[in-house]
Length: 389
Image (cartoon, rainbow, N blue to C red):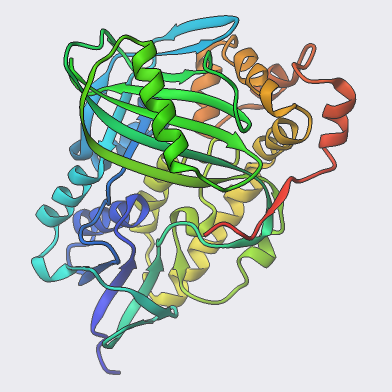
């Protein structure tokens, strides 16, 4: 048989695709890997953050070179409850991911500025050519989800350059003391230096529409409220991510097409839209598969995603309660109550590893939403996510 042009084609150089390419470079250096990215560089203009408890000790080698900032803990702020937690927190930037890929792969293994027109398990069609591959992995981020339902987490973040120190010593993962607009709203702050702070205005909302101008104005107002004088803005990113409350996995991913990864495979935390823990686990395991042919990787990735879907039923239940039982301006109460729970439980929750006892503890006691509404929400699934993408 004729040898393919490349052994593994990774479509998308974001977090999921980038981690797979790095894992392949480290674990399977014999393979010819090609990363095909639509943007001018891999990683885009993104900041991805995680708790150290999200990543297993044996997988930390994969993310360690990508870390741009480290903190020994974090805090949350709610109208009736503030808390400092000791779990270490880390952030990865798109620039660090791009640098790591360029250091790990040959120069001709990165193809940027290229749009994928079509893809199968063993073939990629670009605007100017068609490539044959031993296997194709589609990691191009979110796609329309007509077979899923729920809500959205949308955000706009800016790296603010301040005239004087901001005074933060750790990240503020949720500041929900802000005015509750368009659903559950909170502000997220990452102090990258004494005078550089990444501020993100985030919403758990019913609709995917994002008003960039309004969010920029709210970030400026938040900075003013903190007493910060903004001298410049060095980066900005936006996102609209699915919060998955229900759906039909078999219809979402029929048994055909290439392997998938990341949001393309619904490998996200259903409630938080958090993708890094699953992206690390998936990349580390996928590259150790004995059979890396197109058909084998397609089956393996679908089986992995289907198992992830089954294990996420508890988080989808909570998403239904968040969107179906709580009035938009009262949704913060569910998170405020959650952050009164033991720290190890919170760590396992974000990592998607809640135990049976954790689940009982989260649901125990008087719910922070009307009981009748909570019961009714369990039968719903939220709005269709088909418009996303």
